[in-house]
Image (spheres, rainbow, N blue to C red):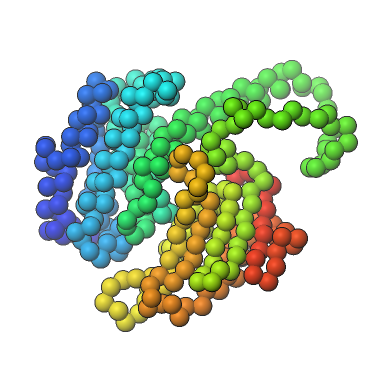
Length: 326
């Protein structure tokens, strides 16, 4: 494990360990709101070992990590204090009651380019995920807003699915339904138009809504990938960021190409509907960006199928009908 440099130890003392530092104050405010202990575990040696290659300037390391933790605590407190989130707050408090009446969170690294929060597999501890990408981290507040909202959804969906499946087994054990291929319209009754008030926000609806669509376009200075499924864009961006080479023969560490998720103009949370791949710096403007690896990743790794009618010499359209698990 990498030794923590003196600069980072000094910054930890000033930005994390002092009782009157902003990070400690935000934790204290959350503790006062909940009326319960709040413990946030941060292991500098582990984080530095995993992220040091992304921080050539050591002075950015601690402020970047602490800023994410502060955003997490402050936005959690804000969400808990809002009356509109009363049902969610009840779920949150019930979780704490079942976990020793203490809010426990652990700061860990996570693949990709965006922050993340989730429940650990044990279910007792929240994870504050630091992305394995170069700072600054973008749209942290919006991303946590969305992550908090869906925090308990997965377990609730599993219970509902199991209950529904059990009911089907009990009530319809001897009934055989005729099979019907996708898109077959015979004998299907008309369905009502959805009500606007029933529709969730875009960042929630398109997290799993199929079919998924992806369009890859060659633009004047690189490649643009537009998609309806954010998870697909995040995986592609994270993969490209991890395996892009650096510019050679310069004093600073810069990638030849930069792959950046672009926030959507729709929704109120963290919805990313585009990915741009462009030269990482003016000194790599010479780079010829080959779209073949991107196209292959979309088809072979993500399992999308090409749609010939929407493709041309500089644009490729892909579609996936099957929902991803999780």
